Length: 277
Image (spheres, rainbow, N blue to C red):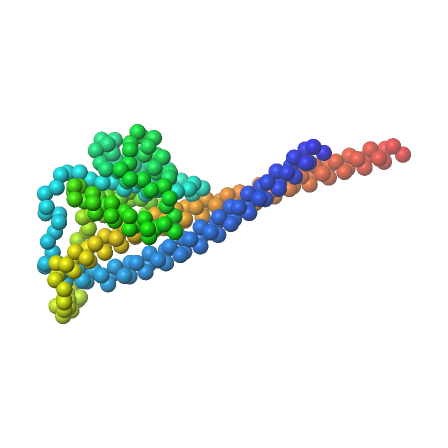
């Protein structure tokens, strides 16, 4: 009977774990859909902002032409929590293979997410800033804080890069390195260029340009953070879905084993009873 009791307890434990992984799977899908919808709205918004940049392009005084020391900032974005498959591992491998130890040692590092912060600290590196709390509820405030950080650092650094997992597809998360500053050069479509001459600028164009580039920088930061969250939630959904399916298979196997043992016990007891008469 002790074996039956042990199997029954294991069945109960696995059933509880299955409920947890199933709930996490649903939460991940809900979060993924919500953030992805925000990303789509953000991309549409950027499409309407870029023509304004085209109108100001001739007045543009690029900050890239300023002489600055050859230093750069690298922002690493991981996850706050685990249970997301190999989401963090592929990011760690990308850092190992594409960023040299010398580059890490000479760059100013900013880490976002507990997992990547722990990884960087294990390399005996001290991040300039670290943000361990990173989830969908902190994206907006974190983007604002990051903007303040990189605006300050850009005065003494020539480039600011970001390493994060990009959601290539729902099932594939691809490590990627992007430049946050200087911003990429946007080209205006020919069909839109004719309409841009009709813009009336009540304010000084230089002031509008400064405000617009600051706004685009914030949008770029918010976009990168959101893409990382989308990739993380997709990886977590896949991991939890696999765990739920494995738990279901294990439950069926253990339930079958339990029934066989129970039936064998009953048969044995009936045999003993019948042989006593």
